[in-house]
Image (cartoon, rainbow, N blue to C red; front, side, top):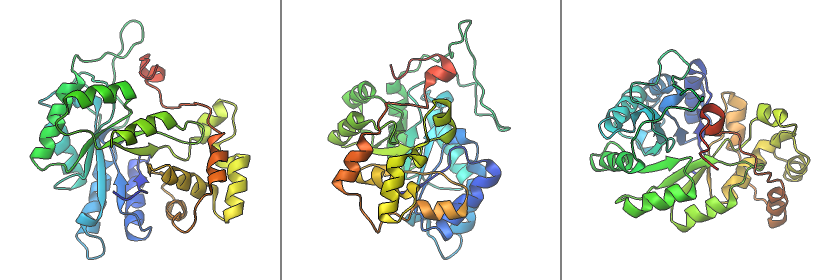
Length: 304
């Protein structure tokens, strides 16, 4: 699995395909991170079909990840959801398929095709959930490996207790836990736990989200004094420093961009190394500041 990949979350359908095509044909990327809920897999699939039918990039040389959405956790829904993603992406198999969240919602809330996200809330504003265990979903995920639809399976947004539980019954342990990681939210202990259990970690939102930082009254990570100084030392961009920092912590990193210059810039991280003192300096920036939280959109204290 290439340690740097292109993230496609929040890439509009009319932009995501162009970004993926540039990343594969000119940017040097061989790892693309997708998800059904991002609602851009069909356009990305058109690009995969175009690129892989040529002579420049082979399908087997590209690592492609997608994710199972919450409304398809039932044992009879998992394979259907995976097959839908494969059809949309024009693929015969996925390299990695993740449970997007450890939350199950009713299956009739299918992912909408016209934007937005369907959901239902009770009288207290709490997201309505389905009574489906993670074990039921995971066992159906394991079948995807046995049938050859996916090469590996994993999870996203899982906490240590959730991982401890899944490891008690998994016959195919999770290969990956994809979680929010950036200098303001470093998750050092969870990374250490995953690596100890031989579960790889992917850092999403590695460059942070400027709008969220402003809302919290904080400078964006990309604009911080410490990152600025280190970038100047290495004659690299601030984004390069954040990607390299994630790499040196042993995590896979998937910066997202739809701008060709930035797509190429974000992978230009293999010709330098951060010193131990620089890594320690970035470590001091941790504010335990999480931005993606189910409590915000469903009053579910998922991470509490």
